[in-house]
Image 1: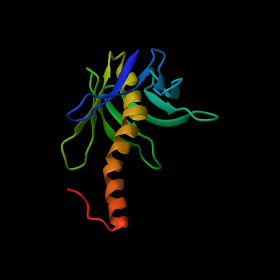
Image 2 (image 1 turned 180 degrees about the vertical axis):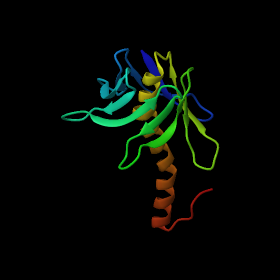
Image 3 (image 1 turned 45 degrees about the horizontal axis):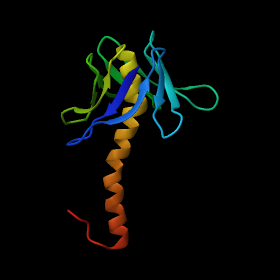
Image 4 (image 1 turned 90 degrees about the vertical axis):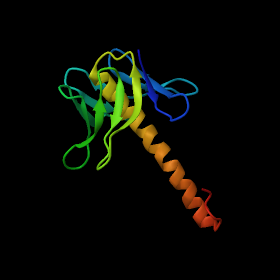
Amino acid sequence: MNKVFLHLPLSRDKYLGYIDQAGNVYETRLGPDKQVGRVDTETGKIYSTRLGPDEYAGRLEAETGKVFRTELGPDVYIGKVEADGALVLHKRLAPDAYVGRVAEVYSLAHAAAGFLLLVLPAHEEAQQKPKNHEEDDEKSGEPAET
């Protein structure tokens, strides 16, 4: 079982979920864990689970470890997975950032699925929380704390 962690600066990494050997990705919850997707380890294609047929979410280039998210038009490069399980988020015009890790990596495909389906949504949510607090302060007319 691959455990997936989100990097939190100056604190312990947050446990998000796990990936089983078959390639199924599960999000840890206070109750039964929820399957959020799967990865085809042969092709590197990543699918998110939904009602009906699974949705194609992205892919992995196995030779380079690059992970791409599917969007309208060409796929978007979002980051890279390392052989040791490190997950690195691509930033334009800035150094790439370490955002998490996968412990006990079975394959790069497993790590890419954890990156795309668990770490990336959690990282984006964490990035939006400070912005939401600033917007709330502006609406209330109170000065923002620094």
